[in-house]
Length: 214
Image (cartoon, rainbow, N blue to C red; front, side, top):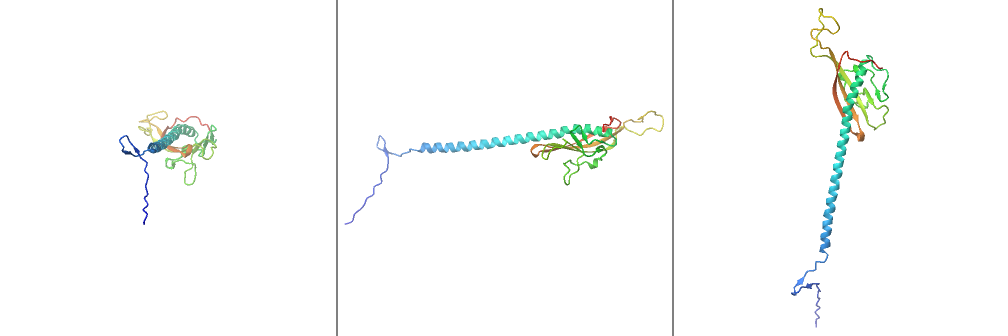
């Protein structure tokens, strides 16, 4: 005689008022909440990264603007120092100007415009700077380098002086005079390794030199 074993699986179910079985959904709300929290956490992380990137972009733009305007403003200083150098026919004898500027080429106004290159710290392959500021800056600190060169040109309307018929200095059939046209290159090395180079021209009218301050 064989024995038949019957295995009965007890399924939990809740009959409703009409006797139908209902599935037990206990815990589904927790799963939905966890999914929503995960999505919100991912979105917040994306927003934080985006805000960080925007801040870095704004900071880099500000750093670039500061470095550029420092280089641009330095051209005005270079023009003033150039006028002082022209006034001294043989150049400066004091290599430190005002305790702030260090002059490497004492008669830089005599440089030709062919010698003007992008300024640098005077490393390998770089043209020596004509002057720089500040004096005695430490490696990695912000500083500005300058190179200058020029040539003489006749101004518009100028002409050679007539052999006769005119008296006095500079009298000519078409007065104009002579100008010295200089190329001024300034390099600003700012914070965090930022760099900006500004190249401009300056015109000096011959005969308007001031007093030499060697």
